[in-house]
Amino acid sequence: MVALAIGFAVVGGLLLIWMLVLTRRAWRTLPPGAQVPVHGGLGGWDKWRPKDSALQVWPVVGGLIWLAEAGTAILLAANAAARSNGGLAALPVTLTLPMIILLVTEHYALKAARATGGVGGTPA
Image (cartoon, rainbow, N blue to C red; front, side, top):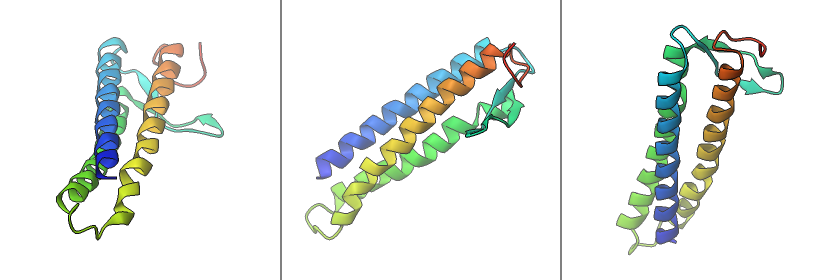
């Protein structure tokens, strides 16, 4: 079970790297002053923010989730002999899903920002 938790922490790390690559590409390709949506609920992309602050959301949240995921995997590896933390083994597996959701959300938010030409609102 420890190996599985470590494997999912590695997968989460790879997803975080992918988020950082998407963010860096968007930072370089979107024009200065561009607007990026940060909320894609049932009503669509309703909260558009300046590029400078919006592009920090996904890597920061993804990094926090990954730290919890990796920290749990390290804790499991350190305490494997004690076998007292069996319930923690599911946490890295469970935290991988929000990482995937964040990555997909970032991808589609950046796609929406490019479709509007960086001005926000509805596609041009």
